[in-house]
Amino acid sequence: MIYCQTEWLLIRDMEDADISELSGEAENSEEAVRYFRKQAGHIQSGMCTGLIAFCQGQMAGYVYLYYRCKWGGLGNQGFPGIVDLYVPEKFRRKGIGDRLMDIAERIALDHGDKVYLDVGLNSTFGSAHRLYARRGYIPDGRGCYYEEKVCGVDAPCINSDELTLCLVKELVKHQAQRQQEERSMRQGYPSREAAEKILQEAESCNPGPWGAHSRCVAECAEKIATACGDMDVEKACVLGLLHDIGRKFGARHLGHVYDGWKYMEWLGYPEAGRICLTHSFACHSLELYIGKFDILPEQEAEVRETLERLEYDDYDRLIQLCDAIGTAEGVAAMEDRMQDVRRRYGNYPEEKWKRNLALREYFEERMGRDLYSLLGEQERTRQGTRPKG
Image (cartoon, rainbow, N blue to C red; front, side):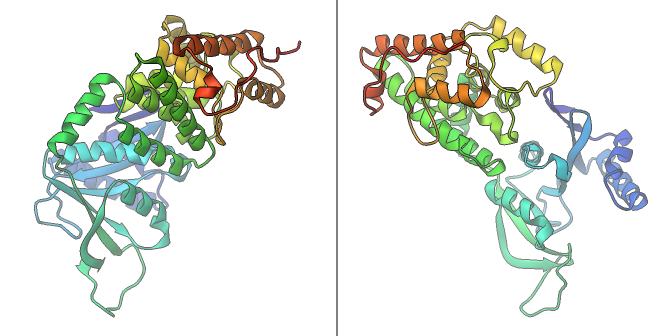
């Protein structure tokens, strides 16, 4: 079964043919082959599900979900358990571990009201500790384990992979939470609270000023939508928070547009994904993009075809406007922002310059007031500096 399929990521059930791919990452390939063959037998006997991820054709991670796990702190108590989550170093900080865990937890929900895992305490598991804490796993309250037994006070142990902590996560959702998630899926974007959590998690993967910029865009969008009187204020805020979410996966140019678009679609939020795409293209033209074209040719073709097909609405226009004035430090004059981009990249297409000014005038007419006075800034010139050359 395929659980996730985008241009850059595939997650599916493991197959016997994957053993050579899986064992290729291990230092001791013969021992690894024996381990993965044993795991394949457990899958075939119906004890567990094995998930494997591929990033642009390369093995990018795996995890096992045992339905009634026999090992670790809650072993042999009938609870589902997550075993052996692994993401190769070069594929970390791209959200792949989170996606594997999302799927494993959804499967676990069919087998119990909680899921558990054991994680080593030594420094090699540092990134795993952060991942599990962020996802809501908490210690089982029995202290650490050594060789799968509770390690008593002053008991001798070695800080090896056998010294572990058992972490547990409750899976039963309250009715209100289920209803909110279902509503978010129907409307195509998450709640404000969920969007903020998505943004915070993304910032932990790739820290930088882009998070503050996203919040500034969201604040501007919320104020403008309120002043317009006929726009959904929460939707405007959420779309602003998530418009740059593709930066979670690294410092990319056109790549962050594409990654955000696909990531939001994968999470079930196509409206948010649409904004990840359209916020960079006020003129509907891929050729006017300012920055590197750091995506595959087939992805570039997909972006171009989608832009040609889309008809922009006021939420597309709103986030385009707010992206043109919002910075990590706060609201800036649109002309100053465009001049800054022109200095950094050596170019700012006149068509895009005019379009941004037209967006400002459009929303000022809708609101019946000056944009910058609404946003708490002094009134700016309405003419703007024209680009030269």
